[in-house]
Image (cartoon, rainbow, N blue to C red; front, side, top):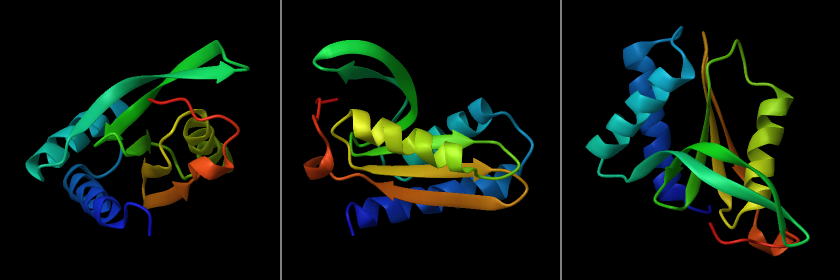
Length: 130
């Protein structure tokens, strides 16, 4: 599995944060706690990492990845009633826009939920380096 060991550690960090804080906070609170938990596990994570989106070699926009782990995995955080199709589409579009292939979508709702998404570079039209 692509980045399997690292994803397992990140998922463990997610449950540590979820079990400690529960649900009801804003995404920013979970983001800050997640960074602290990753650091405790000796995993390098950066929050609000700017990502540029290109079309035909021209920049057309951008977004901020909630957390980027070890420059290998994008983490998108939600604090919603439940994960929805558009949340998954958002993460897939992030993966489509850059050379990172693995993304994790975590929800801090009433029920702990996560999804793992992969978009391999060989299937991307162009792969800008992060």
